Length: 113
Image (cartoon, rainbow, N blue to C red; front, top):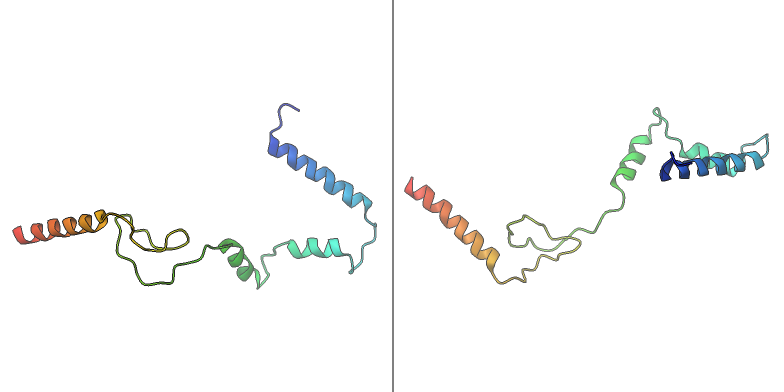
């Protein structure tokens, strides 16, 4: 099978495994069949009123924690504190000098005009 990619091979293997499991199940399945109930619950139906709540949660997924402290000083990249940065400026003051110079330049343009 040289003309089949890795993903297709994996999908074929899963399909064969699923068919094997279905072949081992009883022909008549009742309301108490756990695998059938799980399969029916996993199907999303367009007329389901709770679908919008479920898809919203699924789209959001796990989120990284947000920073809840005081607003940090601005930085040139506009990065807000959060998961990896606590908002404390541990630099050599370049950002403050950068913003000061930018503000002075804009102020000079306004005054000269």
